[in-house]
Image (cartoon, rainbow, N blue to C red; front, side, top):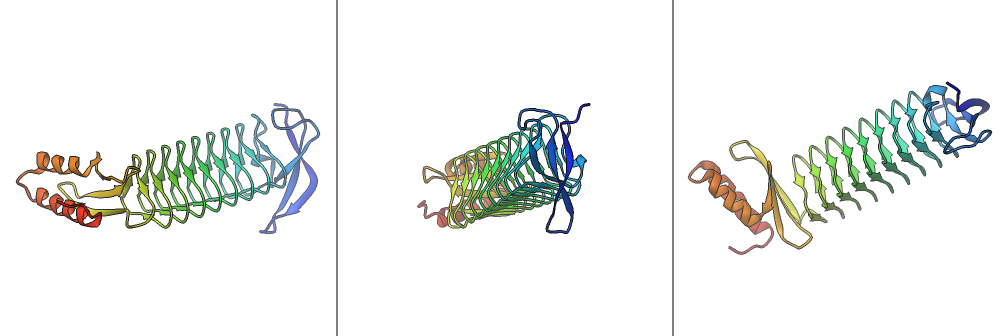
Length: 274
């Protein structure tokens, strides 16, 4: 296979004292013309010789990291460790992708964002600003994580969900649908926030662990229409629908009493009469 780039004698020393070599395009393709100088890599294996993947500007790829497919890494971005940037993904600005992180599909990581650990950013997802995605967290679909938001642990943000501001999503939490978590809200544990939820702070949601016949997590939150919605296992619906479901499924049992107690607390929490 004819190579599309070669290492030059030009180099920089990165923050860890590692020498990185500037690349030069040896045959024209989608993102570069023959003779163009690109960004910096530690070794040839950091950038695929096939596809249209390219590293440009002052961007750096080091360690065993790989850029492949049609992915682009540019600006002052850095990809390191065993990270993989693939598909049509873009990593730009001062963004950092490190560890075993994966950025794939049409995903974007920009600004001063950081994606680390075993985190994944896929689909059309976008991580920007000063956002941090770490641990085993996954941002997918058309989801956006921005501002100073943090998504960590085994948390997942998917669908058209947005997490921004100073919000924290961690543990095994799931934010999906058209949900928005923002401000200084914290969503954690086994919480499930979905639909058109709007959670700006911790006054707008609450959760209950280890209740019911399966010891599930029950979560309540305000929606775009200022209603209260409940998620519990596979159930998602209004507070009224949840109360009806409890009566249908657990009538006359200890679990009905448990869930009715939770329902009463949710009503107190959100100032609902009756």
